Structure formats: structure tokens, C-alpha cells
Image (cartoon, rainbow, N blue to C red):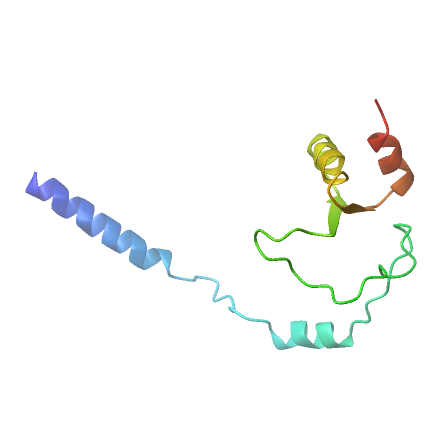
Length: 113
């Protein structure tokens, strides 16, 4: 029994030691190339989603955990059945903004019975 416990102890100790080993020597922060790309990139507002200007809200901030919200923003990317339920219930409580690649298809999907 002692030998089995000793073997398990040695195994788990060595496993946790080698789990921290980084064979590819990957950086844990941004490289200089990534920093330069971020600084030189110009972010353009896409009109493909039907949004031509940013929302007319000032003082945007993250809400507290149990704070009531005024607007809910939903990214319509996947799981449409769950998103339909979220939008259906949230629209009774606050304004809902949906971001979608194809607004007309999303609208048709929402009003489908």
C-alpha cells in the first residue's frame, strides 16, 4: 500500500511539474509585431450590419451584477432558438439591440411562428 501511495505521489508531483513546461517558448504577452499592428490598424465601422452610426447612448458602462439594465445587446451568431427566447423575454423588460450579419434574415427568423 505504501509503495502504491509513493508511486502515485511521485507521478502527480512530476505531472504537475511538467505541466508548467512550455516547449514552444510562447510569449505570455503581446509581441512587438502585434503591438505595432494594433497601433497602425484603423478600425472602420462596417455598414454591412445595417448600423451606420454608433448607438445614441452616452455614458455607456458595464452594469453591476444585480442592477437593472436599460438596453440589452445580443450578437446573433449562433444558437438562434435560445436567442429567440432571450429576446422574447428581454423585450418586455428593456430595449433589445440585435447585432447580425444579415438583419433581414434575422428579422424573418424572429417573426417566424
